[in-house]
Length: 149
Image 1 (cartoon, one colour):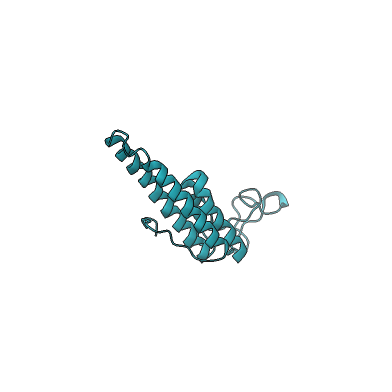
Image 2 (tube, helix red, strand yellow; image 1 turned 120 degrees about the horizontal axis):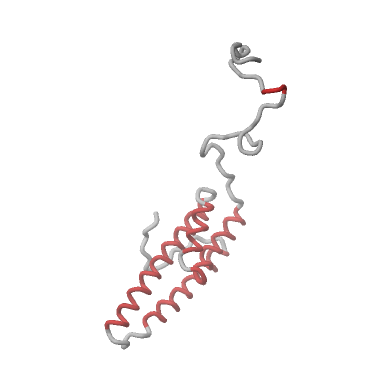
């Protein structure tokens, strides 16, 4: 087809040289942003990822529950709730560590044990949360700031 001819009925151009129509991005059909929602997780998968969000906070602070929440957001109500709960708790723990360090510094070491107390409490509550989540129960940490809703 030359450039001065009209496109065929239906308004679509024919592929050049008799080939197949080209798809953008390596042959995959292009979909609008947000058009294909991800499938919900099975209950056992939700429980596993919620467990990892709670236990991951022991090793990686707020990063583990943040990653779990961002990656799996909207794929299950139990996982959404527990990942946010673990994230809120780990953010609260970071704030408590900072406050304990400041108090230990201001008192010239008299309250040196406060960061250790915060660490032990964080460990105990994270394990309690992991045990509850492993049983399929919804867990709420005590004394937690609910910053992420």
